[in-house]
Image 1 (tube, protein in one colour):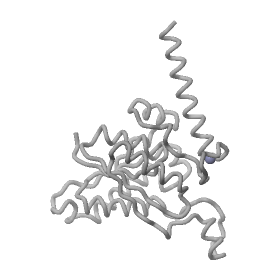
Image 2 (image 1 turned 90 degrees about the vertical axis):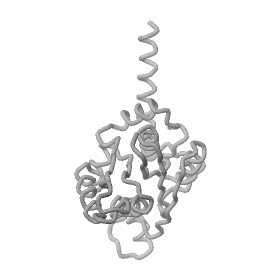
Image 3 (image 1 turned 60 degrees about the vertical axis):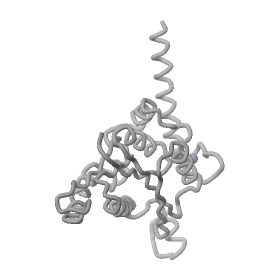
Image 4 (image 1 turned 180 degrees about the vertical axis):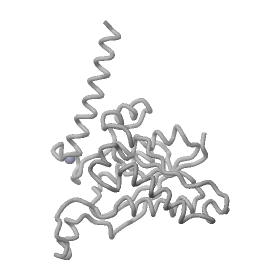
Length: 221
Ligand SMILES: [Zn+2]
């Protein structure tokens, strides 16, 4: 078992699967959560509750400047695109995570990005993370882990080749508390069940549930 990892953790189902994967793979795991204006408060509270219940140490970092283009346009009237895209989000997240990795002498960062994330965002592709890992290693050379010959920083992406449904199945096999996670883009007492995140979640969880029922009936029959 490897010594330690920092998991970038939102409280959503994908990062929860990654967190449970890391718990099985590393001796010590710390969850790192970023608080920024467009993140639903419900997601933050979910992340806090899951870490507390599972006794996983959690670091929360405030990133108040990190906003969607929609929010930025409302504030400044400068930005033309009014969408939910957050500029350079993963670059900012992983740079901040690298600070904690170096400070805590932890050589592994774990992210719960799916294959489909890379289709939607150019800062969530396997190629992006490979180049980022190389860049971070270059930047940390000579100081990481407090020694010139310390271990190289590694970005682990256990879900990067998985579909939504495969990630749910992996989470189930690891005993991750998927029912308690928060996927909705809205900030309300309950998920809206209308947004794309809610719909993708329902279809992936439903498909895995249907497969389990089918398997049981085949085994039973
Ligand atoms: Zn929703």
